[in-house]
Image 1 (tube, protein in one colour):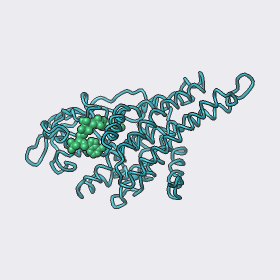
Image 2 (cartoon, protein in one colour):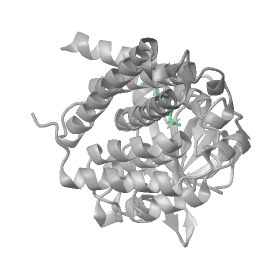
Image 3 (spheres, protein in one colour):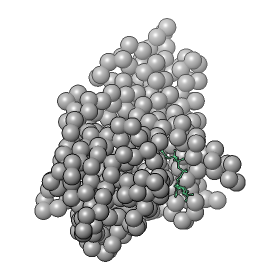
Image 4 (cartoon, helix red, strand yellow):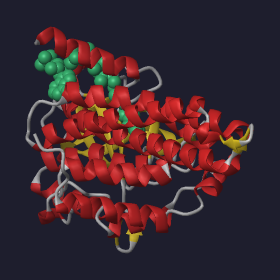
Length: 384
Ligand code: CAA
């Protein structure tokens, strides 16, 4: 056992911290205007943060999952909206194409996705599994893909798609054989602008408001058969394996929100006076801060453990679920405590902790709700 980060990990953590603190500006304003951070995302790509674990052969940064956790925490600490944009591109889009893609798919799609840039323009991806009636119950898909010569014809609707209005590449999961249920789902790489593919309603959200979320419609949308990712019927497995890695990303995003909550609460507690002393000198405040610090350490260790297992190609679904379940619960709790410590100031926009709470809540919902994480954990326990 060794709890020390390597020199390389420390450098990546510092680089992400410097970027986040110096380049991610105006989070409050972007949150209010629901404005996508184009320039920030382009810079993230230039620095290699959008394809962190992609091999350098495809223009990725060739880093490990531990580096990814460290960077995600730093970025999300300043703006969790930027964190989720980065996480989806890394874990749910690049990972699947690198793992399952043909050499042609990797050349055409993975290379620009790993840099987040093509011809000087932002180039990111979206992962499209959820549907109006298939969220947690992901095998209840109704989007269909029917073979027609050397194409598949897609029909259906996808919901809650992060990076939905801003992506160039979409991984679409669709039923190629309804009778086979989970084993009848396949995955397709669909380009923005394909006829029959429409970007529908952009959602107005409680939190992560500067990341975009929308629904997508497919009406007789012809996709080349060559754009199927992995074998026919393997789509659900691709989705689940991608989400195992994605859950490490969201746990790291939650860590960032919790760390920011603790940092702000500590700073405020050292500035604010009540009853003749700084509020940090009240034991009631010290208890809250101590609990936040304890649980943050625990969440960080769980997340790093899941990443460590992924890096060693061990089975890590349970650990990713545990990390996400624990870290997301902490993010909400820590943000609430930060508001409580700030009192009335915590309830207003200027002090940012109210945004942390709004951003934290989604970490208990997307990439598998906390209830789904418990299913994943319990099933693994039963198998053991
Ligand atoms: N790795 C590999 N294979 C897996 C797997 C994994 N982690 N999990 C399941 N599978 C396989 C199973 O082994 C099984 O295969 P066999 O039949 O050959 O044994 C098959 O997939 C079906 O699995 P289950 O029977 O476990 O399926 P289920 O219907 O009971 O569902 C579930 C299980 C865990 C609830 C799953 O549906 C799930 O994870 N739901 C949540 C979906 C989710 O996270 N959605 C998030 C949307 S994306 C998003 O939020 C991104 C964003 O925008 C930020």
